[in-house]
Image 1 (cartoon, rainbow, N blue to C red):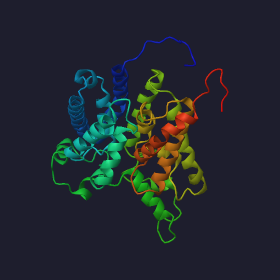
Image 2 (image 1 turned 120 degrees about the horizontal axis):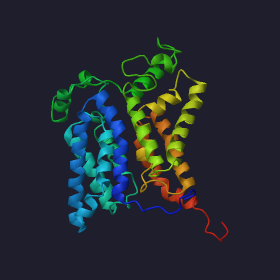
Image 3 (image 1 turned 120 degrees about the vertical axis):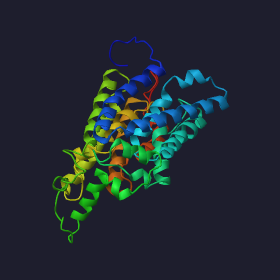
Image 4 (image 1 turned 135 degrees about the horizontal axis):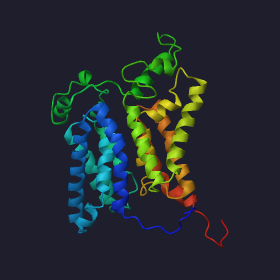
Length: 340
């Protein structure tokens, strides 16, 4: 701790997790406003599955259930899963992903504080690899009413083309690739000129940019409350912005703008709520900068050249692998000893 006061009351896990949940509320409110209340159903399903899976594993391991079920860590994982999954995925996919996160990625590694990978992002990657079609069904803002969302979540007929369109990241990437082809009628057009479809808003995806703003507001509140530090959000956003700026500046007809990358997909959710996980992320100040910067660059690479609609989840897991090495190499020397 560098600044006064130097004596602070210890924060409990429950208190920290509660503040994280509160910080997510602005983004959730924007999500409901633009995309409908179906996301609330997914949040409830994920929360119930997380608590059930946690209780079952605690009973098997002989650990006190009341203590760990009330620390809200399972609920935070559940909410991050629901917010990163499409809001109209079938109920069983949300439940399966949440159980995998809590049972396999968290509890089988020893529970809270022991898991090397981010549980929510692990669940996302497993589900999008196993069910790519379902995990790519994102509705446009205002496209589906609540009754239709409930029908899709709980077993309705899924006419994909009728209920969804391409995500803003996918739509712009496809358009940019067409613009780069000499044979295309879009040849030579820049990203800003291609962002005139129903999927796009001012900076990013229509509605999604306001959800991102909600996550930004909640994340800044967490920094003000000293629940997280500035290192990871600033390094991630800075690296993502800089990576996008280089090739966008050199070839604007082939790559999306830096602001589009920041305002679209899971960038803000990743910067403030996913990469800042104190268990699976780096712990030293310099390590946090390296960890988040690496995730930012990887996110841009996956978005620009990969086959998946967003790169935050895969970037997070790849950088989780490097956390032990990053922490080891960025530890400050012990006072009174020379650094090797």
